[in-house]
Length: 240
Image (tube, rainbow, N blue to C red; front, side, top):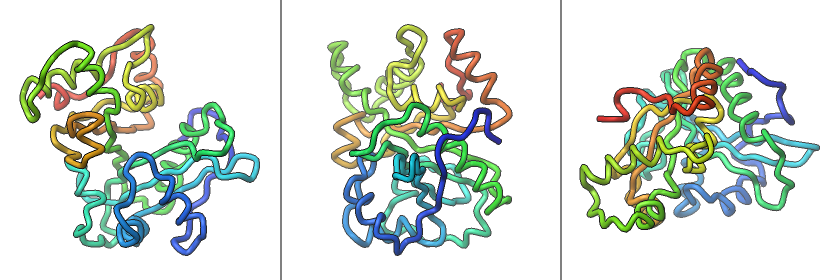
């Protein structure tokens, strides 16, 4: 269910489409390690959506179909993850969404991509009743270092700082850009994931910490109202 007028046209990309190679090369969130990694991200239990605006690809969204909400990035893009029969999946994991470089940025296009993908997944895979992300915290390290705190990861102190960071607002909006996007879309912070991304990129941007955000269509308007009132809506698991 969408709560605003769609922007552009969403399409599901065929694994043989020439656009796949370009998007794999440009992928900024979780860059593919090699061609085999890219192929795995296009298996039967994986989807690649592109939102076209004015007949040009503007936003890319990678989705994994699973049976559990992931707590580690390797559960989604690990090289040895077995391919799941998509008919058995009941969770859709959005593990990367981004504006495609070289195309004019369109306000609201990424949000429209998420909304349209949820609607399309509901049609294609009606068994899938849970839509979540596994998301980086790209500003966490710089925020912690700016506070002059030395944190040996993993640690409870790091977990607490990550929770504080994700709930911190500046002029009413989350200070983390990814949190700003998902929470601004009406998702809720579901869980903080220590050590979920031990890659060099993950350690560089957030000491390996990631987060799940959950999209529940019926809750999104209320979640946005809460955010506008200065409250980040999350689950109790986020504070554990």
